[in-house]
Image (cartoon, helix red, strand yellow):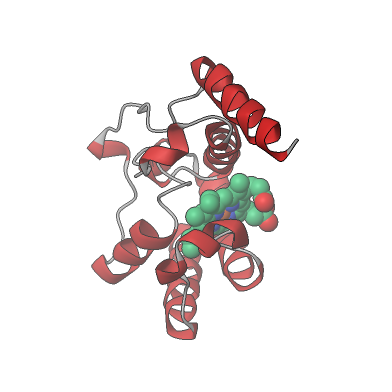
Length: 145
Ligand code: HEC
C-alpha cells in the first residue's frame, strides 16, 4: 500500500512537469528603470527583497519544478505587482510615495515572507537593517513630497 503511494506520487510529479513554470524567465531589466539608493540600502534590498520584488529573481533549480514553481510564480507575480524595484523609475510619484509609506510597516510585520525565510534564514532583517530601511524610506518620501 505504502509502496504504491510513493510510486503514484513519483508518477504524478513526473506527469506535472510539462506544466512547470520558469520563475526566472526574465522581464527585461533596464538599468535606467532601476531604483537608485545608497549602497547599504540597495544591498539590503537586493539581499532580502529582490528575490520577489525585482526583475532579477535568483531562483534555485527547485523553484522551477512543479508544483513548487506554481507557488513561487504566483508569489513573485503578486510581489512585483505591488513593488518591482527594477522598474522603480517607471512609477509615478504617487505610486512611489504609496510604496515607501508601506515599507516600514511591512518589514516589521511580514516581509520577507515567513515561508521564504524558512529556506533563506540568512536574509532575515536585523533590527538595524529595519531601521536603515525605514529611515531611508522616510527620507525619500520627504524628498518626493
Ligand atoms: C518570498 C517573496 C517576497 C520577499 C522576499 C519579499 N516580499 Fe514583499 N511581498 C511579497 C508578496 C507576495 C506580497 C503581496 C502579498 C502580500 O501582501 O502578502 C508582498 C507585499 C509587500 C508590500 C506591500 C504590503 C502591503 O501592506 O500592501 C511591501 C511594502 C513589501 N512587500 C516590501 C518588501 C520588502 C521591503 C522586502 C525585503 C525586505 C520584501 N517585501 C521581501 C513577497 C515577498
